[in-house]
Amino acid sequence: MNTSVSVLGAGLMGSAIARALLRAGHSVTVWNRTAAKADALRGDGANVAQSAVEAMNASPLSIFVFKSYDAVNKLLDQAASTDFSGDVINLVTGQPEDADRVEHWATRHDVRLLDGAILAFPNDIGTEDAAIYFSGDPGVWEQWESVVRGLAGGSLYLGNQMRLANSIDTVTLSLVTAAECAILETLAYGQALGLPLSVLWDTISQVPAALENFISYAVRKIEASDYTTSDASIDTWVMSSRQIAEHVDRMGIRGHQIKAAAASLRAAQDAGLGALDLLALHQIADHR
Image (cartoon, rainbow, N blue to C red):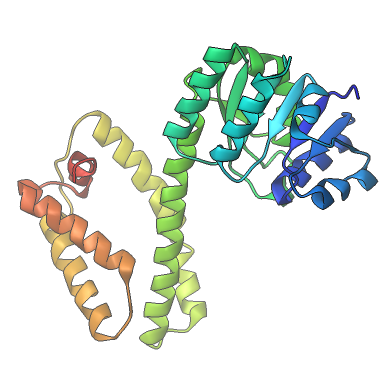
């Protein structure tokens, strides 16, 4: 087979990527450990490889969309035993250390490899709203940028250090996870207090704009190492968060997020930062 792009992994995201490539006019070869998932893409025009190595050798570019880096590492080792000479884009979510190991492998085997983090859902793939962050071999980005922008119009190359894409993915996901859990706990807390969901929504829907302003303010002040405040100090935040955490506890609501925030604030106060701005949490955030 002589195709332009191979997609290895035909789950929800891998299938969305394969179909987006086909819609863009690329010839696509797919492989999946569970053959039925790859076979389902035949009707869309994809070629189906019988093995992962066959798929990789069918195209000058292979895109990995697996669940774990363990699968990536095993497949790369298999490919190394053949005459594989194509480029690889790895779109597997993991930790920065996983990307480090892949980078070492690529350097050792002289394979051009780009690591990526998908910041989109399968239904977003192929649109301008989707984003994939990439890092690693700049040559792969330069050669295949038009292909990946067809998958996600908001794609961005972060630099040649392989771990950068995974790092931004991990940081972003940590924020989204904490924020969404906090929102759900807030809704439960409000309902327990007798507030209608419509009222809670009207209030919570105003929060994103306030957070955007806060982030801009925080970056500016942290870059200047300025933790002074003319508003609420950490001592004030400790008092209010403790009261809310105690109230949530009395009402029998789990309230993990507010309790965690209260504990972080107390730690900053215990470290002697009570008179400073909330931003001073940044000074102890990377210390246990």
